[in-house]
Image 1 (tube, rainbow, N blue to C red):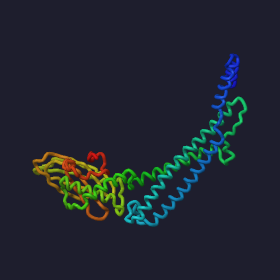
Image 2: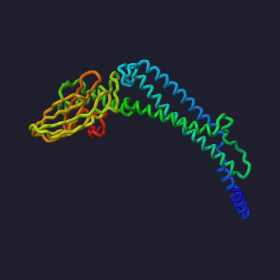
Image 3: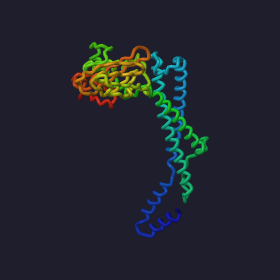
Image 4: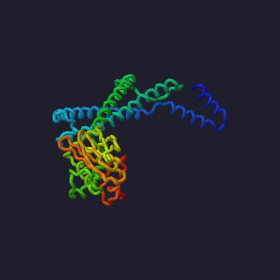
Length: 342
């Protein structure tokens, strides 16, 4: 490296008008070899210390919430599903703190890895430098830690992130995301328009207009803070059997999609004849006209922990044909129920 730089200077000095260019080239080469300015290094270390303090404080807050929830929800029910609104509020706040804890830990890990890279680059630059340069490399030892300790810290942070991700995934099985809450709120206002129109909740087979009312009732429940959330990883199996003229013509099993607060949906194709739906040891019987072609139906199930389950089916085509139908924003996209434009 020294010979190449010296040769470059000699080459430039041997030609008229090239001396300034040689000095500039040398300055650029030396700039590439220098460690970052000390002020920037100190700023990085200070920012890292700030993130570490925030992570430790957040961790203490989360632990306090965990202890409080363990006392208030001591019956074994997950706090997110508690019948007590105050407990559910604490669970939601704990979730918010955990999400912030993950963000802070990820930022801390990124800065720590950047600090290690800067220290390594500074050491390599010092090893290949050919002339003394007035610069202060990152002095890790003066701050009470070594690169080896920093690498151990990286491993520790990675372990913590693994635990935090697991906790968040578990909570996500119950608590709705911010996007889901926004979709529920968007559906709530439209549902209020239909909320006062009566229909029979005990009726299983509905018209398209009645199906619109059933969806509006679900929107109302999803926006009701007094109703606890339910787990998202529990999808009831619906067994469907259809007989025509005494003969079994179709038999299939479908998973119902959970949408929150013990509500489940599915889009199924039903044949003409006598159809039986079995879900969780419950049975519903419906009869479709024998001269009717197979069409798609939307199946909605409300299965609260206490109380009777409520099941409805209604034709998708009739629902979409209603110009004032309630087609809520929270509906899963795989059901392929387009919302009216505007």
